[in-house]
Image: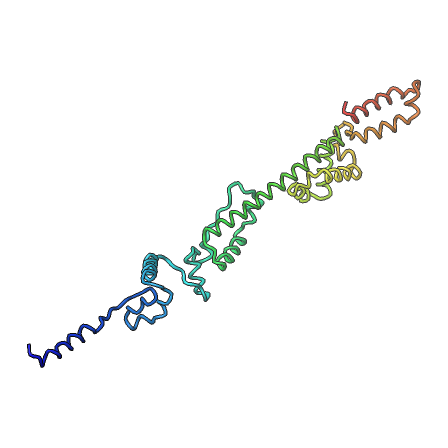
Length: 279
């Protein structure tokens, strides 16, 4: 090999050997540097620390594609879309209503067409779906029915206690005085009042019966009360029987065994005691 070219070749070889080999490394901190220039600075990637987190987000996104979604509502029209998506019918009239079976007529009658129509209109504005409206009306009707039954039970119990007390107070005159009260209803209030009293339950209220029985006794003739062809003496309440017995016992003839009316008075007092004490 000629001496004049050896140094040049040696220099060229040395330069080739000393030139560093450039490699591209991608770490967790600079993984975006491997992306194209138009993507690496996109702010959407700033929340991903590495390629794995980006891939995981993509997989999650893919799993949600195709599902029904609701956009966040802003306008009234947006809200209408949401309500319809959740099951609200197109118009209030399309809501279906079903009242519980066995609902008392007094309660069922309150759910008339006018009331239900008004409720449906409001429910439609609030965006309630068909199942919600059906359930709400059924619940309300059932609740009102339970309250009605509970109240009726208390009234019936009160009436029963009052009737027991009235029977004890009137004794043998109970049925008779009930009839007197009914006659007073008709005499001074007519059939209309009697019907209202019966419908409201007041016609069976012990205090009302006592009041009208006393009205009948003080304002109506015995023949009108017992009937012109009755021929029987009106029954007395225990208190009335005791009061009449006391009046007879205060008569001189009752205490005088030799008085011609003594025996009849004693029998009469005995009969009054029987009425008073239920013997």
